[in-house]
Image (tube, rainbow, N blue to C red; front, side, top):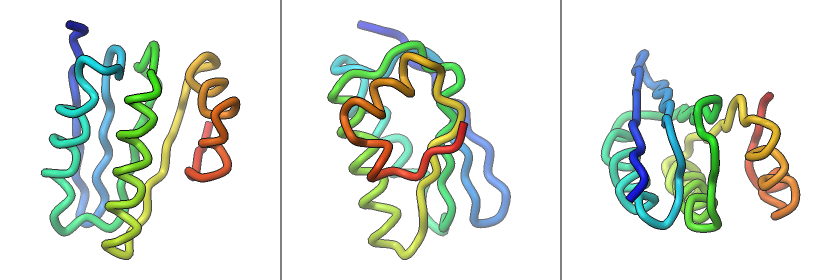
Length: 103
């Protein structure tokens, strides 16, 4: 099992989530559930991927689900700071056309 640490910072209706480690099949459900549980009253969710070394298709699915969750609330999801490898995965899979991503 891969260790994933999730750091968060809340400022008003904005929540910044900074996962550290790998987001894969061993922890993506816990990642998604933990972040969803923190979105009450949040309209702007930022997920800072600067410390994510790897993301699997399961991790991508978790990001898509969080995007849909925020969209249903009338809010938004912003993905920030993906490293070159994670950014390439987002591009190759087409997620960069679905999610709002900022380097």
